[in-house]
Image 1 (tube, rainbow over the protein chains, first blue to last red):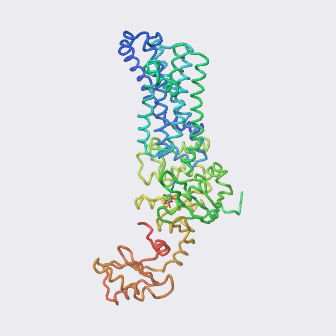
Image 2 (image 1 turned 135 degrees about the vertical axis):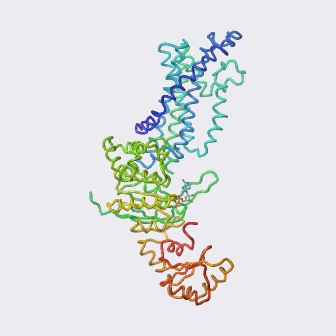
Image 3 (image 1 turned 30 degrees about the vertical axis):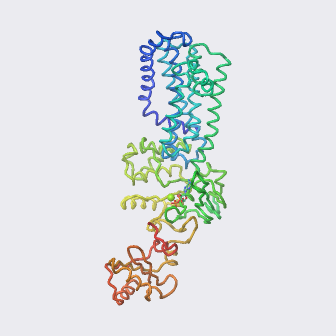
Length: 252
Length: 325
Ligand SMILES: Nc1ncnc2c1ncn2[C@@H]1O[C@H](COP(=O)(O)OP(=O)(O)O)[C@@H](O)[C@H]1O
Ligand SMILES: [Mg+2]
């Protein structure tokens, strides 16, 4: 598994500078835009709606979780499907490595990537005074867990995908709508009442809540435990399924 | 460890791919038997879809068998896959090289997959790059290599663990003649060094050049086996007369030939006429004499060529089909 991880790190070493720049620039632009533009608008017009904090402080951790989801999903789906079709998995299959090790090594690397991207995001948040202290570390782990909860099931599915446009479809019709209904841009309490229970079932909502309560310092043990348990179940369940689907695809 | 057991032994080996979506299940390998001895160079010859790659994958312990039995290096591929793979070198039908990495990095990563120490990989990589005549390319990105170079790199890579058996799935398919000859030369050198080879091909000349012994497979079954010479001897004549006729003359000429002494004379392999879309083949012990007979029948072929029989002719005889459609 570590050998597989090392492989992905070798590839990453060629592009990490560019990717770190993107990891920092993205949230920077987002937060400037939100803080100075949309945030000012929202704060002036509806200050009471969102837990009595500035819109930027509300929005930033939501975006942190959603970005972790998006990065992890893309790497875990398109990245995995490519590796399975003509990439790294194919060249590693005839070696002593087992398909299960290929799954574990790649997921470990995706975890590492999400950790770095989330770390960059949190550094930017801290620079804006939106997070600080030990809470930042908690939010970092929360965001990373959110990522893994998406990457593992995505990999389990994508290793069998032969047409990359299927991934595009899922991204557009499953992942993007999650943004809307998981309290990323606005609180779930602002949604119509009948739709709220659906939100509470969505994995991204758990990720967003976990990151947001940790970053605002309002996290409770019970609440966080529920979110963590939900996300862990997805991550572990996804990995267990991936062990089976990886073998089916790579050892036909 | 000296052992008298075959390196690979297959009995009634079968592979059925399960149904997927609307595709029904498929019996790609349908009960084949063979044994491979150390130092031997063994070939699977057959057309596309015959089940060659499937057989190779089962031997390489990357595809579970569906029936029969298979032992590789005395082990069970279903239970000891990683142990078996650690001792094999595998060149798959498509090169799966890492285009983003350099030639040397590709060797390095691959060696690491086998858990080899860095120093060992470094030393072997240098030697293998020499062998593959890729020294000058060591630092180049794989993307920039030609097809023949990619293939040689794939072979070099497969040798990084100093395998007991080297499996090559269609090593020269898609290469131009010059690249193919360089590759044959490299493989022949390995064979001289005593490396045990299993290769698949649908090229007859390749099988003749590289294999001590072959099985001819078709539709997942073995239809013949033996050395290239034995097969030619058994299923073809010594010589073949290839005739081409004008289009308007072709059918009548073919008909005449088919009923002539050329088609009916002699034993099974002796004296036979095959009609192909573009030419007529006359199997005979003596090509020149057969051509004289053709002329005596007042037939006027556009071209007439006498050549040695090849495995292509064996395949045609065995299956009634040409090997490369
Ligand atoms: N993974 C697979 N799933 C289903 N069918 C397969 C699979 N791989 C190969 N086949 C089928 O099995 C048959 C034999 O394929 P293969 O072993 O690749 O033949 P060859 O290498 O001789 O061309 C083909 O008809 C092919 O379509
Ligand atoms: Mg094949």
